[in-house]
Amino acid sequence: MPQANFINVVKSLDAPFQNPRPPEIGSAFSAKGRKFNTRQDLFSFDLSRQSSEKQPFTGRPASGQDAFFISGIGGGNSVAFGVADGVGGWDASGIDSADFSHALCRYLAKNAKENSEEQRLGARDLLSQAFTDVVADQKISGGGSTACVAVGNSTGHLEIAKRTRSLGDSGFAQFRLNAVHYDSNPQTHAFNTPYQLSIIPPKILARSRVFGSMPLRDFPRDASVTDHEVRHGDVLVFATDGVWDNLSSNELLQIVSRYMTGFQAWQASDQGTVIGKELGQLTEEGGIPKEKENSLQTLLAVAITGEAKAASQNPRRDGPFAKEVHKFYPHEDFHGGKVDDICVVVAIVVDAAESGA
Image (cartoon, rainbow, N blue to C red; front, top):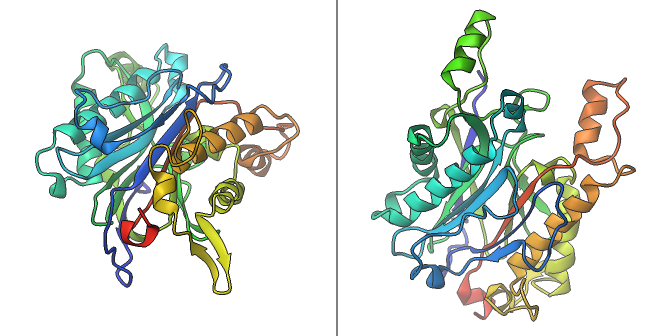
């Protein structure tokens, strides 16, 4: 069986951070069948403000079967965040995977905040413990979800547990200085059949055995590990399939570049693209003079969500999902976008010593 990826993302060894900060994080979301409200369907994370809150935010409102979480780790400066996509195929069995994906994010946030040894918490361990908690939760009778989970600390280290990204999954992309630096690879059992964490009800399991088949069920332990680096000015986009099915990584780069260059967080110079000195201020709350999306990372999350929503509803714009349908089923007359729930989390890496913050 192919393995899902868990990805360790670490800071550049040849350019260590002088005055690091936790990644600056914002998010936006939109459920299918609902109009995207750019003033309400968003969240800006403030680590210092969350320290006084009893419950971390998980994004349950208006996000459909997709979910996300952002939480501080213990009482320190580390953060955990990510997205989860409830697998819609469980609908045929009368199970709403929204319960699974939102419970997974709820436990991810809870376990991160309650962790007492923040430097020892890894994304793999965090995801494994949350999955164990979901399985033990008597309120969750079944369902499945993909997920992409990250743990970042103030030293510039970011570890990402990815279960998995492909068409119909959750995943992430890393953008650096007006280029796509990394894009997570697709992994599926078959076309539009993602790897997934799941709970299989006994009745469904027994029925499957009668017919000589088994429902899909993957585990965090199936993961492999690879390493990447993050640098000052990198933009990390975590998203569910409502984005990846409708926008390519290059289209995401166009959105990210439009805002990063527009606010001069990325600037053209004789040496090529460089990081603007005001990046740190732009990522702080109120760094951009808007009523709600008042930080650069939240503005990016809103822009990506809005563009993905528009593309999903455009019958004349063939997105990545439509192109894959044509590849695997050339006789299918499928065109346009793929309507789905959308969750986006954007993290911007900031070294305060270089940003003017």
